[in-house]
Image (cartoon, rainbow, N blue to C red; front, side):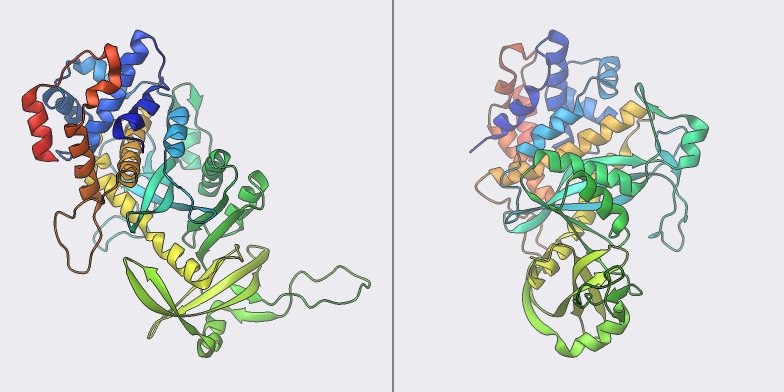
Amino acid sequence: MPTLVDLFRNLLDAFPGSEKGQERARLFAYTLLAIILPVGSARTSNLLRTLECVYAMRVSVHRYYTFMASPRLNWGVLWERVWKAIPKPLEGSRLLVALDDSLNPKTGKKIFACHRFFDHAAKPNGSRYPWSQNIVNVGLLKRIKGRWACIPLTFRFYHLKKDIGQRSLRVGRRPVAFETKLAQAADMIEEVARVFSSATILVVADSWFGNRGLLKPMREAIGERTHLLSRLRSNAALYAEPASRCKGPGRPAKYGLRLGTVTDLACQMKARAKTYTVDTYGRVRDVWAHDEILLVKNLRCRVRVVWIYRRTQWVALFTTDLDLSVPQIIEYYAARWKIEAGFKELKQDVGSTKSQCRTPQAVVNHLQFCMMAVALTWIHTEMVDEAPERRHSVKGRRHFAFSDARRQLMRVAADSNFDTVFGEWRSHARNSVAAMFMRLVA
């Protein structure tokens, strides 16, 4: 079984063997540990203070801030090594990929990727167009020690087309070109599918991404092994499959009889619903549902539609993967909520919103560090034999939290000789007071 040291050594092997390359590798590894260490936010000044006080590293302010804005960090290679280090990433034969976007509110001018974005979830007393960054995220949905979790895989900053034309944005030497959120999502999923070349890709997204604008470019780039699982809009029209007929003049029909909207069929199908036992949201529940294979024009393919009924409400889900059973469809879509929990872990628990960065490369690097720290925490939790102990009991919750996984990782880092990952070229030694402090925090 690989250890924490093996996990970090695999990442550090991607750095050059020169003196400067090894120095960046050392700062890279301890910056990740400083982010995971639950002593404060991931603000750059706080990370530097953690390196000096906890790990007894001596690095100047100018050198560290230059490192955090360095264009020499090869994030593509580093992320690929992280993806390959995930133990048993498949759920059966499928790779469950969660997709969503989130807003990261900011204060201050001239911050990279900040625009006035519309916030559909704004509070009544909040701005509908906050000054914020819009981040499109892709994560891996995976069961870890009996609970679902979302491991961050990659992200893109979404820019408004009018702002790109006005400012001519650049990241390093690369100009920023306009891409829609759907195009960005398709590009990221293609990168993931390139690494997991033999797996069936099932993208789980909300209704905004659940359309042909995402499915078509994915299948053009990846092929028929990619599928979509999402929620149907209530006014979407559904069609029966075309009836087979003898060869004759004219083009064969693509769609059969129009059956009505999702709302119309929900009332008709309720009498035919059955009870399924499904593990959703941390507990086993009895769910009342009915499924049909139908056609939807905005996807232009056959889909399995599942109506889920509650006492006074209903929800309609669909998937292009016709081999999925009804309990799998319900459970996988319920697991999609973990990407929303992942936003909370990234923004509040890790503290990525506290970033002081403004320049393009520094903003990108800081968010890369925060997302990789979250991913390594979940990967380490899956690698160890025992599940983290829940520190604070909450009524109705029997599984551990992300904060418990962070403490477990830091306990392992404090108890093991983590400095050996650097071999002969490490330039510091952790003092006993810092080691004791780490154990207290963990």
